[in-house]
Image 1 (tube, helix red, strand yellow):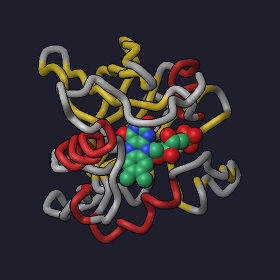
Image 2: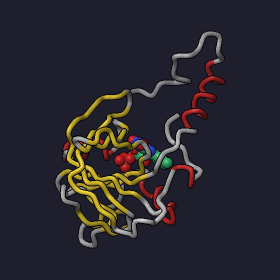
Image 3: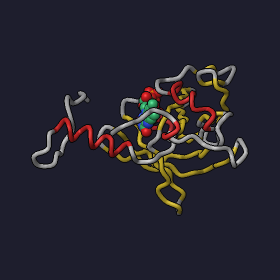
Image 4: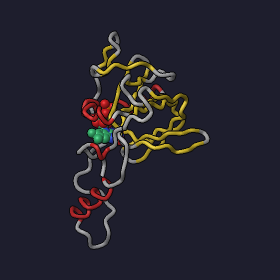
Length: 180
Ligand SMILES: Cc1cc2nc3c(=O)[nH]c(=O)nc-3n(C[C@H](O)[C@H](O)[C@H](O)COP(=O)(O)O)c2cc1C
């Protein structure tokens, strides 16, 4: 899909498109969110990806939604492999989110993703050993939403890998933004 040039509408009547675009982005960026690493797998191919668009969508069944760029390698893996994990990150580990913004190097023998040790969860999706906690999901629905896909997974396993009171990473702990 060709990337559109310039601000994306609709625009309020009389608004300057560029100015309104910058304002709308700042408003969108005020929305509080977490910051996670999504683990994906199809066969022998695994990946980890930094993501902040994640939310619980239903409590019966237990459904989790994540918004993933259509061009991302992770998108291909989830579409094919039908599983994903959400790794909840230690606030002390904020540096790792920069290491998961493009397809990772997987060392299958050492069992590392970009040097970070992982193990496979119940679904087979990779879980970082240093995550505070994880949600392991089987894909139930794929909803096309513009240039992203909302992958909806049912939580089939969850657990803590660090003490429950470990502070977890949020977008506001970084100087990064996404979307807008
Ligand atoms: C702070 C931050 C938040 C991000 N949030 C998302 C997100 O919610 N969804 C998404 O598709 N990509 C998000 N990205 C971009 C991905 O991490 C990544 O660059 C891209 O999707 C390609 O991943 P891949 O390794 O699967 O190809 C975010 C990046 C950063 C730096």
